[in-house]
Amino acid sequence: MLRMMISIGAILAMGMTQAPLRATDPDPGVSLALAEARAARISDVRYELRFEIPDSATQPMDGHATISFNLTDPGAPLVLDFAGPPQNIIGVDVGGDVTPFRVVNEHLVIPAAALRKGPNAVTVSFVAGDASLNRSADFMYSVFVPARARLAFPCFDQPDLKARYTLHLEIPESWEALANGKEIERTTKAPRTTLRFADTQPLPTYLFAFAAGRFKIESAERGGRTFRMFHRETDGAKVARNRDAIFDLHAAAIAWLERYTGIPYPFGKFDFLLVPSFQFGGMEHAGAIFYNASGLLLDESATQNQKLGRASVIAHETSHMWFGDLVTMRWFNDVWMKEVFANFMAAKIVNPSFPGINHELRFLYAHYPSAYGVDRTPGTNAIRQRLDNLSEAGSLYGAIIYQKAPVVMRQLETIVGEDGFRDGLREYLRGHAFGNATWPDLIRVLDARTPEDLDTWSHAWVEEAGRPAITTDLRVENGRVARLAFTQKDPVQARGLVWTERLQVALGPTNLSVTLNAPTVEVAEARGLPAPRFVLPTGGGIGYGGFALDPASRAYLLEHVSDISDALTRGAAYVTLWEEMLDGRVKPGDLVERLVAGLPGESDELNLQRMLSYTQQGC
Ligand SMILES: [Zn+2]
Image (cartoon, rainbow, N blue to C red; front, side, top):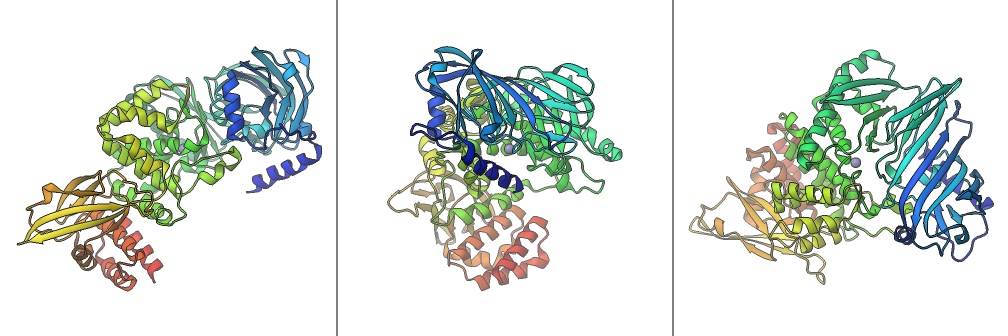
């Protein structure tokens, strides 16, 4: 929060010193229009960067950047992103010639006359803006996601102009530093040390990172690879107690991902930094992951859940090396993809090591209630939204991306099948390695591997907002099922979408897998079965929508939900009854009474927590 205020302050200050605006000047931020125009004429970007990091956080940090690139059309000015104070740009030369420049609307604009077709090299001397450099007395670390590199240095701050970075850092002699590339040169001339890091693989600006400070370094070999952990922890026993587990978890995640993707770890060396009070759980800078220290260095009394959390964040960030870093979204409207993939892979990597935890039930509670909370409202949004400017990227994050998108991704794997899904991902990663891709690029690859029409599926689930309203039609004759059918309706009548999805229907006491791929689907396998005690279309915890139970099942579950022996089915029934209550088909008093009556006998802790929270909300 404080950082936001500092950066807004910097932008306000800028209004006083920036060059006069011209009609053709770009908007502030990084607009989609600017990003598309640049991607069309600029390629082969390289940054040679040098930062002089002073001892004291209050002293300015001088920087030099040489930005080389290939230009197809030199007819228009070059627009670089730079959102530091305008007076921080000291000088610009292009191809060795001092060049006039203007700083306007968070951009550094270089006149067309200075450019030529083909290779160009722009050198800028500047004072690095502090807002994304997290400077404190003894250390600093950069965080440039989603478009904050431009606060520190001039660049093309968009994900699809991937570049190689050559980084030089000048630091106090007693400090250590890490960056995406390996340290390959070190010269000390007291009291300063200059480091040079190896050229990176092509990276977007949001994944470029460096940190320097009084760090301690632990290192270990695992599977022929050296891992290094930079940290500031002063409790040596705590580090000693945790270090092997931290290295093991990284090595296991890499081995799993190499097997699953068929692609070796793409970024050479593997370092990570534990930051005290880091603003995220972790940030997946290629070859140099930053973590919140407290998530990895656990206390002796750590619970299973804390250990699961640690394993998950390590697997999540490591998964990003393939999903997000190797293949990057073209624009931030697809940022949800990399997050969902990282969680999805992390669950596959980590869950088998925690057999004592009911992962399916955990997934259900972690995702469905919050996603429904937004998706049941008319103001809900689609998973994939238009994003006109990276300055608005923050508005994308919410329950639809964090809670609904994982549900949708799981549906996608169920539809395509585990093997087809994995093979499709391999093809997608290979096809776009070190480049960029969009959600439609992935759908195209997967669509070829299934008879289902994934284009239509994706349109309903990802490009449009809302959820289907699904009703059950159960007819019983002579104690047997005469007809079981599910009908879905689009709450937005004029749209008439069909959300294809798999259900695990609990037919107390059996289960049936059902594919909803038409407005009405009759379940032929159910015909002739003994009349079930209840039909719960959400039984296996995978169906998503506004489910209206048939009246007999609703009445039965309101009486007997706590008698269901399987904890997941029970949990799914509680969520469904709660939604039925919100839709006015179940009386709040009846549901709360049932929840309270079920509490003493509930053996599953996750169910218990949810029942208590429902009871509190319902009272
Ligand atoms: Zn992530």
